[in-house]
Every structure is written in C-alpha cells, then in structure tokens.
Length: 457
Image 1: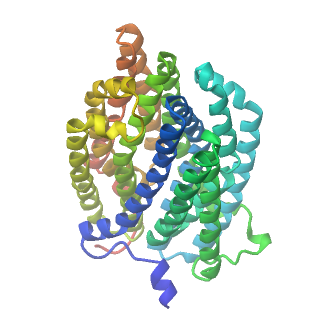
Image 2: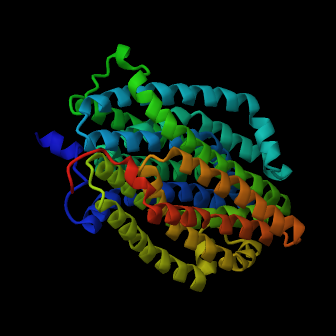
Image 3: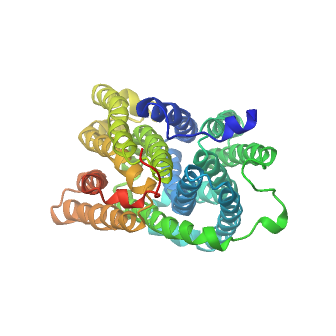
C-alpha cells in the first residue's frame, strides 16, 4: 500500500493551486537541473575552450533537439493518456500503454540514431556551421547521438510516472544525471582536455545512469503499473496505440515544426559569425530557464486536466488554466528584471569575450518578448494537451512553428533588412501564438465534450 500511495496519486481532489504547485514543483526542479547541466556544458566549454567551443556546443545542442522532438511528442502524449486512464480507473490500460510506449519509442530511438549517423554531415552543413568550428560541432553531435536511447528511455519512464501523478521520482533521476554530468564535465573538458566531445560524453554517461535507475524503479513497482516486463509484453497493443498515435503524431509534428523552424532561423543567424552564434546560444539557455518553469506548469497542468476530464470534473479545468497562468508569471517577472538590469553578468557566466558581452546587451528587448511568450503558453498548452485535442495541436504546430516563426523571421530579417535582429524578433513574436489559440479554445467551451460521462462534480 505504501508503494501505491507513492506512485499513483489522485490529482482531481483538493485545492487547485496547491495541487498544481505540489505536482509541478518536482517537475520544475527536474527541468532546472536538466537546464543546469546543459548550461554547465556551455559554461565549462566556454571557459576552457573559448568562443569557438561555446559556439560548437550551441549548434550541437540544436542538432540534439532535432533528434529528440519525437521523444518529447510521444512521451507527452503517453503521459496524457495514462493520466486519462488513471482518472477513469482503468489500470489495465496503463500496463498496455507502458508496453506500447517502450516498444515504440525504443524502436524509434534506434532508427533515428542510424539515420542521423548516415546524414549528420548534411545536417551540420545545412545549419551553416562556420568552418572554424565544424570539427568541434561534429564531435559534440556524434557523441550525443550515441546516447539517444537513454534520452528516449528517460522521457518515456518519466511520462509513465507523471501520468500516474508521481513527479518526485523523475526529479530524483535527473538529479543523479546532473551531478554525474557536472563532475565529468569538469574532468573531461578541464584536466583531460577533451573539448566539446568531453562535454557531450559527460551528458551521455549521466543520462545512461539516470535511465538505469528509472527502469529499476518501474520494475520494482511493476504490479502498480500492471506491466510485468516479460519480453513478450514489450509489443504494440492495438487498443492503446490508436489514441497514442492520434494525440502523439500532432504533438510530434508540433515539436518538429518548432524545432525545424528554429533551426531554419538559426541557419541564417549562424551566417553572422561565431560571436552571433555564441550570443544566440547563451540567450537560448537563459530563455530556457523560464522555459523550464513553463514546461513544468504545462506538464503538470496537462496531467491535471486529463485526470479531471477522465473523472468528469468539468468545473475544475478552468481553475487549472487560470492558476497555471499566474503561477508561471511570478518567476518570469523576476527573471525578466534580472536580465534587464544585469545582462553582462548573466552572459558573462558563459563567456568573457568583450564582443559577446557587447552584442548580448542588444539582445535584451528580444529576451523580454521571449519571456512573455514563455509566460503565456503553458496554461493554454495544459488545456490543449490535457483535453487530447489532436487537431488543435496540429493547428498550433503549423501556425507557431511554420507560418509565424519562419514567416516573421524572413519578413523582418530579409524583407525589412533588419539583419540578425529581424531573425531574433521573428522567433520571439512567434512564441506568443499558442496563447491566442488556447484562449479562444478555453472560452469556447469546446474542450468540455472531451470529458468522460460521469456524475456531476
């Protein structure tokens, strides 16, 4: 009974803000730790190798995003479906979803790894990687791709746990990975002089150890998730694969659209030289700090919406959305003030290059728009994803990722000849699109039709 209470939690009772904060807090800490160890790669490489190494890690990080968007899409979809099954008290389907997720995502990880190893030269060239950092970028990217199985594995295990209301254990796993990554970063890049490849290797080893701990937890609690880990049960189950694909494919397209559009924009930015690449890379990491808060609230809110709809508790859904909005607004405002007042200090954590610091100051207005989008998005994504609206997910993907991000970047950067600032602003403004779509969806009440037919709240 103790283990059951530890892993499976009811998110449909109690105060909405307290439940949202309690469930999202470990997710927030997990995201922050993940962001920290990603930032450590750039900080350590920037200090030991210099601007060229920092730029290579920045582009290599973009390449890594290119091969992980599938994991993000299907793991988020799996989490929502598991939350729905928990809310409907259909634990047998939880087990079949676990087997399906493992089989699907591990197969995809292997296929994507092989494809990347055959095409990485073209990808790095497509990103307009400066010649002087090409080899560093190649080393970092190739090393990271060997760890894709661990990345996909960690994401699917975390999705299973979060879907059941357990956000504490994913935090513990990422904490293990973070500590290992930081220690090995300092060792590999510092005394061992392995450069960007050493930073990538530290990340892969940390992820591998974290995944092993995660699998061990699921195996020890296999009765609760109704999955016994027998080889014959690692397969695709027909009754759960359809809803997983129906929701997951639009989520994958959404992630892919945003990822590819950002890579497209960055391919133009990269033509402005290593200083521009370094500033943009550092800015992405700083914006990622708010993105971590945004993602934690979005993920927690999505699970709560899914359970509430599964249990037929309609009135609880708008409360979740409104509380998600103000909860993420507070840290966003604090970080925006720090960025506006101390830009040289923030960027100086990564590089002491005077040219990088000078260009960083000009990025501040762009950062404010990025923070605004990160503040407004999570509440609406929680509703869209939690309600399982695959069509709306696809609409957001096309508008945010393709039409607005690429369209605005080309309009401002090329047509209006604003240069790198046009590409920066175009990318930033596109981040506000999901808020407007999600707000219309909320007030239309169309999401109510997705609730299970249950007794009144």
